[in-house]
Image (tube, rainbow, N blue to C red; front, top):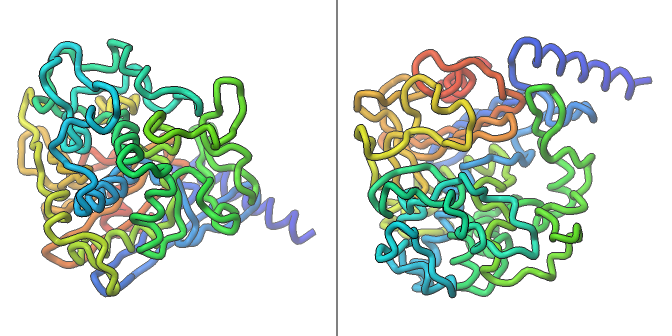
Length: 405
């Protein structure tokens, strides 16, 4: 009887949240260089199970994953295994060129900063487990025919499967395991790209993502690891032994598939605040952190798009949420006509990244001058109202500024 009561209460709470356009779950963790200073969690990680959210529950954080991938890249750069400015074709083992600009090499710096001239129009995540990522680039829609690499900013998820393929070819290691070795384990994080390299206990705490109709769309695996955490092979099998280094960099969703908790994001933020070091662990040099954060693109009319084309309504939002970008790092509060990239509303520059997918909104932002930062996410907010002071959603503004969700 008690179990029925709990589930009924959870269901009623869920229905109320949907009707009120409020999040099904939200988490906000504030931190400084020394540790977490405030934590707020609300709602349900799993409606069906009636399980309340905690700040240690892993969630698919969408494009914040890109920032974490860049940390892994910079570790390999520091070790001399990768070069930000080398032609990636040398690592891939095949030639990556925009057909309209065949003499312009594409580099990791261009891929990480979304200036590669790739687009998402030909797809970026659905390559089957036994497929070849390079086949995507035979489709003319994969390329911006009007702008050469380095000349235009277009937020493109496809850049990051290419980055993952380069990392695999440089090391011979599977991307999810490589990221675990380079970033997640050194920071003591129970996190993973897709689910294969997470343990069963971590997977059991998964935060379920819900669409606009209130139905689960990701990670509703009922307390167990999913039977298949990747796009299956062309014959429907899910045998990861078919993996080959660099063949299919999309396998573990480097563009958005990181599962990590709000507390885990805060730890990454603290590492960035510490210029590569947190709690005595040196992950990156201060110079590498500065290299990531330094904007290589700042919006001016005609030099790029200020939204993600893969998000259907992004272009209709008032103002621009992306106006300065480094190596998978955004800088907020850009003083430029047309920019509305300040969900905090205080005009202070912050660095980090936003995320949006499958009814989730997320953010990781640090204020380097103040020595503080915040990590947050909200689920079930696909139809959340627009923001009142920026191009971010209203719930993002509330979570960023610490207003009650």
